[in-house]
Length: 153
Image (cartoon, rainbow, N blue to C red):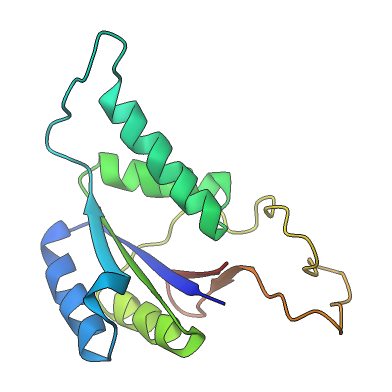
């Protein structure tokens, strides 16, 4: 199952160093990307709301990998304030290593991770006994001592 480490950085200038360090540990370039809010948004028609479209697309992507509404809102707000996101998708070990790199470079805490969990069938929630015959492991994993979050999807 893919696992994605996501880190929000207040200073977008530091993102190139983060991406470079993640690539050094063996991530293919196509599995690591950074994202900033565009400096300008192209208007494509009378009913075009390009900033809103950008934010909705980002929200859908984050939701797809398991981010809560609070986390998604935090990431979007971070971008609005001039920050940048880094995504690194790979094996569990590589994603954990990428999250460690993000934390060393100053990834900031985002949202309330104790908010409502996304509905994930066959996954044990807090206070539930995990299913023994299921190999599905999805949801979010907060790195202890860090601010980058790993999402298993």
